[in-house]
Length: 309
Ligand SMILES: [Zn+2]
Image (cartoon, rainbow, N blue to C red; front, side, top):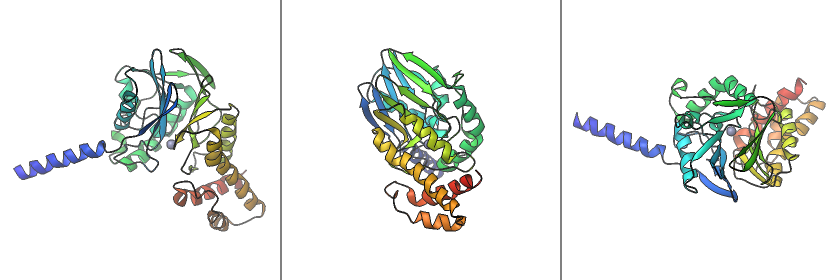
């Protein structure tokens, strides 16, 4: 009996350690803006679904956190990242993304009476994709989809653009078109020339064209709209913060390549299987992490989408 109890206690301690094993990196981008860089790999129990990048803005009135992580566990990692650079409290959370790790930690902040705001369009996307997000997340981190505590933003704004001035910092939520998920938005800081792009930009790792969800041509068009803002600093949805040239190289050029190369393949009436095989052998984007598992799937999806145009 005692041995069993001890075993259970040890097991719980190990679980506790595992939950705290991952710590995201906090990187200064400008004087008052920081990126929080999550794991570059897949979701796991250790990273609690925080395999994405987010960040925060320090204002005169407190901190604006962009994104809330995937779970209460990853929300706490973001909170700790904020505390590592400032004593100011989190005053406001903004949701710009529809995929799990951009908003499914909302409940942790709402429980502290911290408002969570988003464009209404983003919240519509969150609602539409919630069950899929729950499944994908729980299969990555363990547990049951129905056990996740999921809460929507407490405040939404109609239309494609909402400018907020918080603690003297002007910031603008903008929907520029669908990308990785329908309803994904950006946060633009015109004075600092910083853009939080959410999953519109993947740096350092290959993006994923998800069946039924991501439309490669829409994503390409939306990416080009973000470029029109002429950002000097990019805080992407995945990977490290960068300049725009890096975002162009790691995301924009790859989207262009998919649309162009798969388009040519269709013009030449190449068979789907042949196209995937031939284009997967192209090494242009092999510098991106996770290309082995994603490139073939992305070519396959792009083919199916462009074929029906
Ligand atoms: Zn993502």
